[in-house]
Structures are given as structure tokens and as C-alpha cells.
Image 1 (cartoon, rainbow, N blue to C red):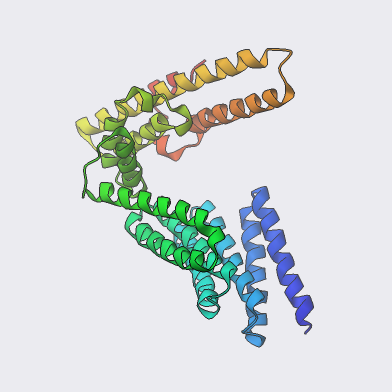
Image 2: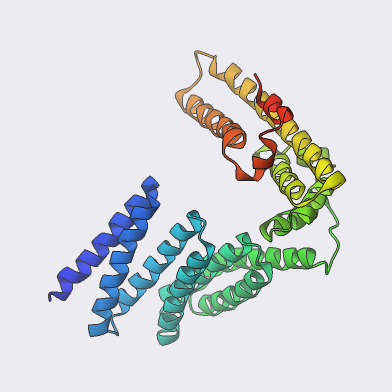
Length: 314
């Protein structure tokens, strides 16, 4: 019955949840966040006007959403992110003069907009980003120090709007970069045939193909493999061959990077900080190749093919 102890225990569950999430134990994180929310909600029944507790609950809902997203449970992720946003909105509407909570409201909307964009729901994401910009504009009027954030958020909103124009067909892509925008949007929406066609246009550009860190070839291979799984007959054969070609080129480029890294690591006088950076690059590049060979579900339809195994043969 001690509110202070109960509040501290709820906060402790939240802290453990964050630790579990950082360690990759997502079910453990969910369980701790669930305990934290339950205890906070029980406390709010007795003290519904507790500002700090209401804000903390909204924050935990947001963290819960990120875990569900990582667990590939989009419906639950969206429900949690929406609960966080609603909590922050109620606080902001109740205390519009409090700059921090108004900013928190923007952050909660921005987080959900990013999630919607990743899910291919670009129209909803664009509408929400417009609300973020409007809210942050009001914030800057009373707290000018957030002007830089407003400019960044405005840039994101404009990018979402451009992507909506492209993905809806309201405007034809005018460059490889815009073709990539279409490809990503179609892929996120599950329209793999159109995604693969967009990648086919974008990847005619040698500079785009060479951007290994952006994984355009790899993503194109994934889209083409998915397109092959959706298609039949000649189209299936066409996209299977294209997926293998793009994947093969991606792996060749990654192996070239690994060779360059190995040469630099062989230098006995290499500075420790440079060595650490190169080892990180090596691990990342090799990790992508290992994931492609054995785990990426996008490429599952290719793994039984001898051409697929030949790509990774030493």
C-alpha cells in the first residue's frame, strides 16, 4: 500500500525490461514491460492526475511497441505505439505550456510514423508526419531551441510526401534514387513484382549497384526472389535468374571488400583504432553474406538451386 515503493517497483520492472531488450531477450523485455505497465496503471487508479506516472506509462508503451516490432508482430506493435502516442497527446493537451511534454508528443508521433512507413503504409505515415510538423511548429513558437529539430522533421515529412507521390503513381520516378523509393515502398507493401521491376530500373545505374553499404543489389535480389515466388512460368524463371544475378554481383562486391580489409589488417603497424574499425567492417560484411546463405527468408526459394550454392562457394 506504499505508493512510493509501488512506483519504484514499477520503474524497476521498466529498467529490467530495457536491459533485457538491450541483451536481445525480447520475451523477457515484454514480460517486464507488462509488469511495469500493470503496476503503473494500478497506481493511476488512485492518483489519475500524477503527471510523471502518466508520462512514464506512455514511455513504456512506446518501448513495448519497439519490442513487438522486433518480434515481427506489427499489429501489436502498432497498438502499443498508438497507446504511447495517445498518452503523450493527453498530457500535451493538458499542459500545452510544458515544452518537454509537447516535444514528447512529437517524438511519439514520429516513432509511429516511422513504423508505418516501414510497414508500407506510406499514406498514413505521411499524414502523421504532417501532424508532427504542426505540433513541433507550435513547440518552436514557445521554445526556439527546437528549431533545428523542426527543420529535420520537416525534411522527413517532405521525403514521405515525395515517396507517397511516387508509390501512388501520382508522379513518375525521375532518377535511380526515386526508382529505389518506389522499390522500397512496393516491397514494404508486399507487391514484390512491382518492387522487382523498380529495382530493375534503378540498378541499371552502375553507381547505385556499387553502393554496397546501402545493399541495393542485395535488396533487389530479395525482391526478385519474392517476385519469382509469386509468379509462374516464364516470369518465375525470369525473376529467379535476376535474383541470382543480383545476389552474385552483391557477393562479389562484398568479397572484394573483405579482401581489401584483410590486406589492411595484415599491416603489423596498424593503429588499434583502425584495426577495430576494420574488424567491425569485416564482421558486418561477412554477417550479411552468412545471413543470405542460411537465414534470409526472402531467399528461401533459391536455396535449393545449385546456382545459389555456387555463389557462396569458396
